[in-house]
Image (tube, rainbow, N blue to C red; front, side, top):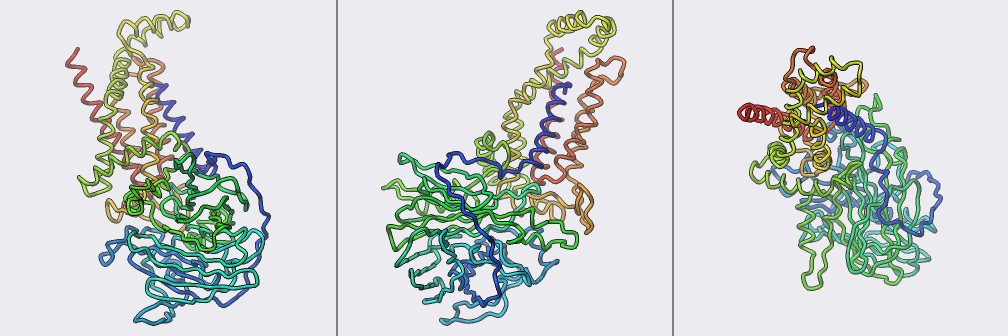
Length: 608
């Protein structure tokens, strides 16, 4: 690698690190500007103690915990994949284990006593199940302050009057359905929930409103935090139709509560990056949508429970976001389809296929809720999608996502072989000219113009060009960023173990061992993979340096030798807390690079 290439890589790594640290993904702008947005000034009202009754429906994919407040969902809990439940695709991760250890009270599902329909009757359970679920929604902290029901999922809220904490009565209850009803002097609201029989992680909601149905919204709730590379990456999306063509719009995350009026959403989506909710209106569309910022100190993430003595995950650093689907003013009876679960491509594609209609051309396109995270995702998304398809094919061969990453790395190396070989040959030629260039520098040290002319003459004569070593890096940039986004954003890698006891989740850093007291930058965990990767990079740079005698080196080669130490350190700092899948990719990419360099050296010696 010449000086220009090294400087480019160092600057790229440093800039990406700074982007990750100081410009979170939530800064992303909406693709289509909404013309009319009405800001709503809201004041958080303390919720006093009150009686609240909970009811549960559950199957192999979902535990739905309904509250008498709003007839809404206080919890949506996703069961872990186990030997007994192979239908679920949710893997237990380290945070689940830590919360069970650090705050057992908050590891019960549901959190409070509840009613369930068993043996053809309503039965009260005094305590939920200990562990075994991922809480899709942020929920009340045990022994903590009460939270408003306006943060529950599928609550009906109004921008004109506080109606979200009204008490609903259960009017029907069975194994797979439940119905709530509330009446006041303005309206009667009936909400009936039932499990979908033909799609996983999906259920139906029928809302019937008699009376005033103006300015009402059906809300998404606030998804629990999931960290990617140590950051929270929430996402709000709309599915819209324009000129009979559907497209998905990613919204800018709100700083307050507001209502947009100039669009007619087919469905709305609120996700934490890996999982989320999609609310799809199956009847006549209403215009607008509601978005709201939720202070993390008002609605805590469960992460605040982990090592709370050292305040590792401060509540204020993890705000939440809420989105609301407008309820049609022209129709009293409205049907909704709700997806609440993992944003796994195969699951969303299967649901799309289930509900598609070949005659009408209808397709819900839930697969468009998938997101690739990162500052450069607008560039890398097509490359990420291509490489994800290849990685899925690799998984069918290896039946291991870890080995699929390694195989994908090899395939990508082979795809980019001509560019890498071109770069390697150029670097070898420049190194071969090192002694001659050093002599020219010594001879014309006091004549810069003559020095540059003689260097250019020699390089032209020998067919060497220092810029050729740098150019392929620019061409590979979309692929590199695509891999970067893919390996930290794919749900399929979440909680998937590669080497048990060390690499337990490919979307999280590897953990060789851990401790309680946080150390600056390092935190509470020791990650070995990035150290191995940095050491391999250092070895590669040393193997690529042919000239050992510093007297025979040019100034550029001397600077390059100094950079061989700095570059691995830069990557070590940048990748130390990156997902293990990403470190595996760069580790094996470097190993394959060493093999390619060795092969190129042999071929060039044969051709001399």
